[in-house]
Image 1 (cartoon, rainbow, N blue to C red):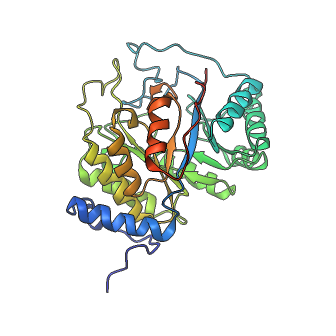
Image 2: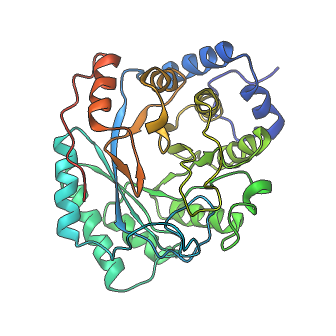
Length: 328
C-alpha cells in the first residue's frame, strides 16, 4: 500500500516526485491544497522581509547571481557590511509594516571569525529583541559559528541547494553539492532551523527539480522552511538570456513541494514580481504559506508594496497591508 498524501516521509524517490509534478494540474493543486489544509491554517500567510547586509564581491561563481565577483559585466554597487543598529532599525520598520520574520543576507562564501561576524551576531540579537524571527544566509560555516548564532537566538539559517545534484555543476563550480549538505548538517546540529530550497528556470529538467526536492526530503527532519524561487535573469550573468518561467511551472513546483514536505513552510520567493495577482493566489492555494514582502529581495526586484497590499486585500481575512518602507 502506498503512503497517504500528507504523511511525513524521507524515502521519496526522484521518479515518485516527477510523477507528482506531472499530474494533471487541477489534480495536483487539489491534492496539494488538501495536504496544506491538514497541516497548516490556509489563511495564515507569513510576511517576511529580506535585506542585503553586505552586497557584491562574492567569490562564488553561481551563474544566476549578480553578486558574484566572477560576473564583471553586472551593474551592481558593492557595499560593505551594514552597521547593526541600522539593520535593527530597518527590521523594526518591517515589523511595523506587518513582517514577522526578518532575513539578512551577506554575499560571503563562508563565515569568518572577527569583527564582521561579531556584527552579524549583534544583528541577530537585535532582531530577536524586537520579537521577530531572525534568519541569516552567510555561506558555509563551522560548528562553533553555528553555535554562536544559536546562542544569539537565530531562528533559521538559509542555505539553498539551488537545484538537483546532477545539474548543480552546470550552475556552480566553486562549491560542491556536498558542501551545501554539510553546511545544513552543521546548522541542524547547532539546534537552528533549516531554511533550504532552490531556483527553477535555470535550464534544469523536471527531473532535476524533483531531485532537489528528493534531497531536501531525505533530510531528517525536513527543512522547516523551503523557499521556491523563479530565476530572475540579470544582465551580465551567464543566465541573462534565459526565458521567463511559466507561472504554472512555479505553481507546479510549489504544489509538489507541499506534497513532498507537508509540514514545511513553503516560501514564494524570488520571481514573484513577474506573477499576476491571480497566479500568486494560485501558488498560495497550492501550498505556499509565506511571501517575501517589500520592493527588493537582496538585489533583485520584488512585487511592489502597493501590489502586495492589493494581494492581501484580495485574499481576505488578513486585512489590508500597511505600506512597507523600502530598506536601504
